[in-house]
Image (tube, rainbow, N blue to C red; front, side, top):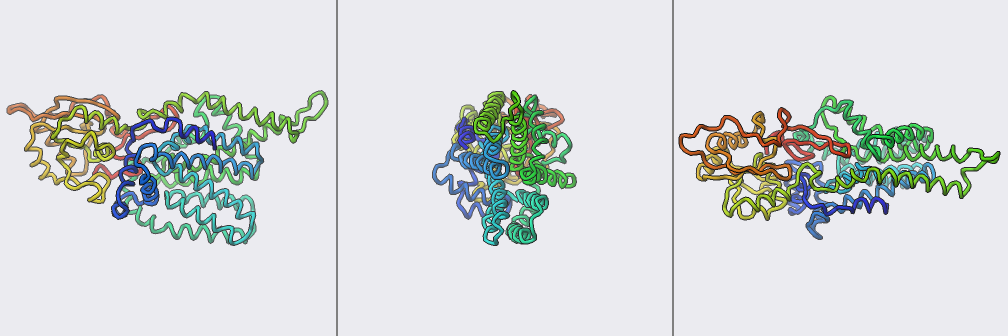
Length: 528
């Protein structure tokens, strides 16, 4: 836990929220009635998290405080993984499993994000430990803590409900008596019953995940690499080998293997018909990988401890040998972490995230003059002004009709196409804050307001200045002189990917970052 806390706190003040974090930041600072109104239209799946963060940001609304709950949750998860390892395979395996979880780059990445995924991972791991305790206690009262934690975790993110399938397989593999099945079924049924209203509401908001694609074998391979302390090289292949050896530790494998395979497997299968899969939605399955690798290392250590030296058997239970093997394992993990240090260091740079809204706001503050009109293309780009209003404080949002908090939306309601044309007709210059994909000529938004923005800019304005910063392009458009022909195409910025306006790129830690028409967890299909 100390190691995980250190990794999580390292570089936490990197500066610059990206899109998803800015949504958490600005929504959590609304009043409870405003948050409740928003959830009726969008982001119901994150409702409990927003209410929790509302209480957290009341203490101090800042970037570090925004990410602290994720650091604390990752720290708790590392301790819970270690506790599972101790209970199922002994202290040495528990120590290694907790450290493996802590040094995995994917863990560190989400430990530093102001989103709910680290909290969900902590809830799932805690529920798994409570499952073992309830099975051991074999009393009706013992299922109450398990059911409560599972319910709260599923309310933080509804896809955590897949852990119930993993737990059911664990009970089947361990051949528990009928009374245990009965207690688990009541707890799981209560959790599902509480979750049903959220599922019903979120179904009506399914356009939020319209940007997700059908996962293939490449996604499965990437998930396997993300679950390793190193995505390639000797460490990766050694991890796979140790994971296979760890299957021989039956008690631990009966818990870790379902946790590792069942939630991702179900989500990938369902996503063949309706795409819902993303690595972060099954972050909690990473605990299973850490446990299996540690169990495999424990089996290897046990075998080494039984090697004869000079005709004498050195027993693995001996304190000196046990301590030596434990220290050797810890040193191996330290070497692995040092090897991956450049990945961890890069992940703590604001430039490593999909966008940096602080940099966008700073650029706007330097370039825009007081009173200048600004146009966000598409409207999701207004997140920069909502998260960092200082850079846009003296300019005029020419398309905005009603603010985000008052309208119960994420980034506000805009004027109608006719109103927008009338407003733009009264200005000779306008700053455009644009997402890279929106500058691709082939981008065809469904929203008539977005189409009106593109049409007016192409017909009546020309680009005088262009700046790119934080994943966003800032352009100064000036009114075209009489007699000038309208532009037939938008000038290239060098930041949009030709033919792939919503392309994906792999970052150095092995997992991908989406360039898409909206922020993570929501994709209002090319419309506000």
